Image (cartoon, rainbow, N blue to C red):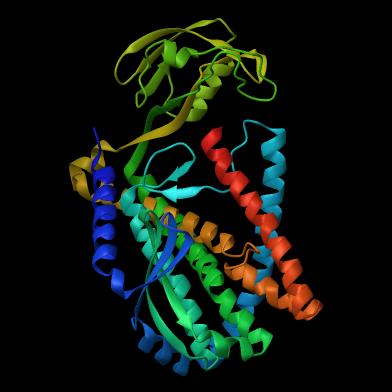
Length: 408
């Protein structure tokens, strides 16, 4: 049965598809793969007056922020480039390793970084608004005309991911000094990275203490089973074990909360880990969950056969404290916890997408920044050749990472 978040995501995508269909004559659509993958823009004047006002009032400050963005942009480019290269090495040397890049969507599926729908749509709106507004603001601070702003949609047959855009006058932009162009390109990623740390500060310094005051640990949740098919390797050091592992074969359901092991309380993940480390392979243990009790014979750990293994992905479970429920009810504490989770997601996605935009690939901000630098090092023609090969190299790395998420 579909949950409310999934239903909301489906309704949103249907509404987005209807909007794109009704406004199709007003859209500027670029076909990436004809009739399959495309990018559509719906042009407006939204936010342009505010950009002009702020740029006029704080022109010098915006110019200096733009220069700071260049420095952060190139440092971020080095960081994300190194991360992609090192992650490819890890993927090929450690089969159990996770890809460093993946699709962020409000649907649970293999290869997808799942974010609950309402977190996802709020994050997309914040990320796009901050990113594009910053491009426009720095452009206006440099007296560069911004022709339009608006909404955009990345489509795979139907529109999937909403976005936003700001459209500076490209012909005029190309005539400007390199430092002005670089500051405009770097503004979007820089703003996402900067606001990510603002969200982190609010989450860790304000919201986390509140959340910790209203919740308490109540056990360890079974998030999923570790699965192994015949002859399939769990890791590079695993023996050819066959599934299922004890957690699945014992009948424990995904979502159950482990509360005791052999009559010892396990409110925290650390408690459960300690209890299991004291056991040996083939030991029988009694596990009590919030639903039932189970007699389980532990298996060998695939990475170290001298250690016992349950074969489940685990996560900390919490509940609202009884005294908080009595004093404030359930809605307010749950709302506070939800807001805390939102700020954590806003930090993660702003930082991740800000850095991803600095990958030196053609249409991304990082790619455009690198192109200008290569024009200075080489002549324009040779610089573009080097730029093309660098972009193709990193595009291949990204595609390998995304593909790995679906096939592992």
